[in-house]
Image (cartoon, rainbow, N blue to C red):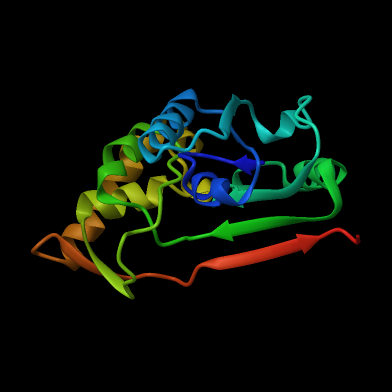
Length: 190
């Protein structure tokens, strides 16, 4: 099972398993994952529109569960406890966080308040160039600064961030060093 988002990790692992189940509360994300599976010819993936807090949700047991840049969004103790009961003996949980990857095409979505879980870039880079729009999207795409947390002051926050950015770079371009990916693996005894 993969807490899916756009299915990036689930689809990369699908050839290694008999079946893959992607879980996400956002139907739009699952639609993207489904279309990507079809485009890649992956027929062993299914998609469940559900929050991780609703697990086990009758999904059964799994040899592996992945969280792809998603674990920080949920009630971690509750979800981790439940997932541990869903693992087969010797099973493992893989948590991948890629904090620096927020592609340009997600800028508008992030500013509108969606919760993007984008795929990693195609190239291995230490740093990337970003626009002010990209930086604003990065700010609003993290769990600690998600748009809903600002309530009716979200527009004030965006205005303030843009003013700071304008003072920092007259060109409106920023070189952003990408942080390392973080991978955590939890295993149950066999």
